[in-house]
Length: 133
Image (tube, rainbow, N blue to C red):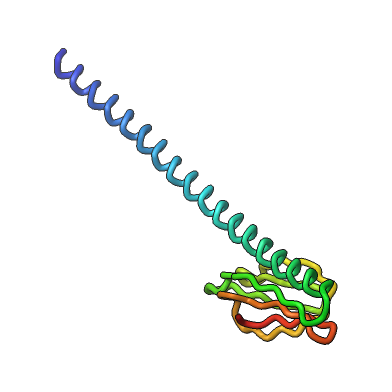
């Protein structure tokens, strides 16, 4: 009779370990999924913030008098991240096919190739010149 009781405890122990292991693995998978979603949301938020900051600065300088300047630090130069200007908006790209845009009202002379460091916004001859500081 003692022999069967020891075997019963062993089976219960193995089942308990399997259940705990499955819960642990499920928790790790859930954590990884949520972490990935947070990273995507963070990239999207930072892209929108960068595009909005550029468009706001361009629009504000455009509404100032000629020879007015404004400067601000930007950091968006990482792999897969760029900022481009179209005729009516600023586009912040953070991965292939993903971008955020913000409208602007000014004619822009874009003189920068990467967005990293001090950027100067200057109004000359009724257009906004965006250049390095």
